[in-house]
Length: 367
Image 1 (tube, rainbow, N blue to C red):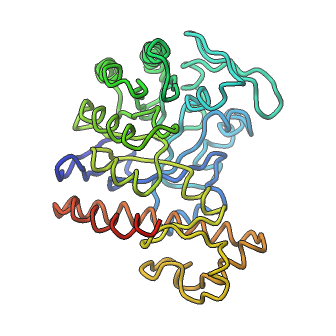
Image 2 (image 1 turned 60 degrees about the vertical axis):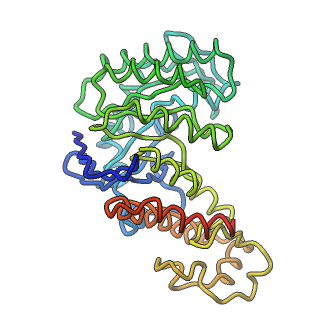
């Protein structure tokens, strides 16, 4: 189901080809998040037109609604949402972290109180795999335990131990040929990150993710842990940094050897009127754009920038029109796709450092 060909490197930055059952995906790649079998405000045709070939679904949310058994009966997640390209599903592990007040965790698994109706849900590694196999995603993720930064050493040790235990059980539970990634944990403790990476890379996973970052820690901590952990992962398998989608963080992650990234940030910010451009972030709600008939980003050739003015985009947002979320989300995801495409080309041409400096000198000055 999965093969990965590392084509070239520029220092740590990598360019490769991820092949998922015949779907060839150039890396590095940013993956939009489709929590409820939809990337909010966009159709699958929009995503295809932008050029995306791999998106995310959320195991926890789809298990609750409409139910992974329902999706399975309807032919799997691809058919259910009419998406012909690849899908990665998380395991519910992030909800172990984000729904702290609604869950109880033991070595056996996690008991959640549903955020929808309060009913108890018991999620084990075996159940997480069974749900994802019902969804029939191309890439499945192991169930893991993510802790916050900072956390006590005792809590991090327990999370690493449990993550390894659950990873073994996920491998044993897999019945399909769908790809399965291990997730390295360890918070900001480099020694425990090393231990987690060592234990997981001894198992036969198709790729490896770095979890437990982008949870509110300082940026230098994120970069240090990413660089340290990526260096411990196999060169011939894809490396995925979970939950990172800010353009600056993305560039730094790729610089540190990451191939795959995802985040809700581009679409969530779009719905809140925060737009990504080559000259920095723009808050389209600001009054200064009321009479601005220039394109959102003068260097962007997406349909939003070539057809609509900043003034019109501001009007849609201020009027709370549905079209605002659609156009803003389209542009932000187009921006992210263009960014990783340009980064990939820079890596191939061995000019990544120059590209990074040029981009950040303009982007950060105006953000």
